[in-house]
Length: 161
Image 1 (cartoon, rainbow, N blue to C red):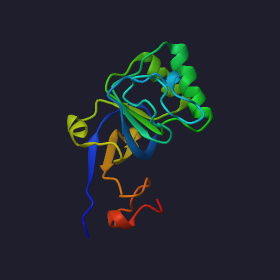
Image 2: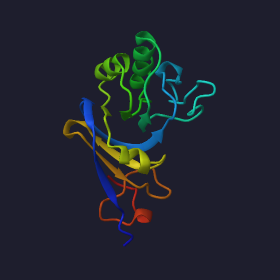
Image 3: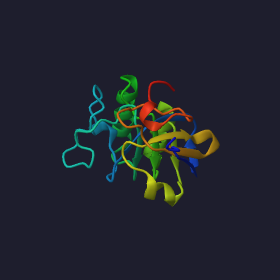
Image 4: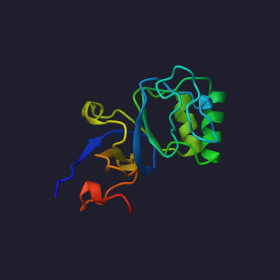
C-alpha cells in the first residue's frame, strides 16, 4: 500500500458548510462575472485561469474583484446553472465576496495555515469543513477526479465516495 497521506489544516469559517472536490488555484483575484455561467470557464483575458473551468472545484484564490452587482450576479448565474465552485479558500476576503458567498451558500474560509499554500497543488483533493474550521488535503488519484477511499491505493480509487 502506498500510504496515501492526508493532511488536516486549520482555517477560519466565513461561510459555513462542507464540500469536497478537486483544487483549482488562481494567483489572480477572481471576478465571477467574467466566468461563463454555462460552462464555468474563466473568460477574462490574461487571467491566470483564462479558459479553465471552476465548476465543481474548490477554488483557492487571493480575493475577489469587481462591484457588488457583478460579483453577486456572476456567482448567482454560476450557482443557478450548477457551474459554481463547490467551496472557496481565500486569502483576502472582502465584504462583496463574503456577502455573495453567504447569499449563494458557498462554503468560504480564510486564515488558512501557511503550510497549506506550500503543499497544495492543482488537482489535489480537499475537503473543506467550514463548520469545523478545517481543511483536509489529500493527493489526487491518478486518472480520477473523484476522491479516493481512505483505505484504497490511489491508483485503484476514484469510483466511489
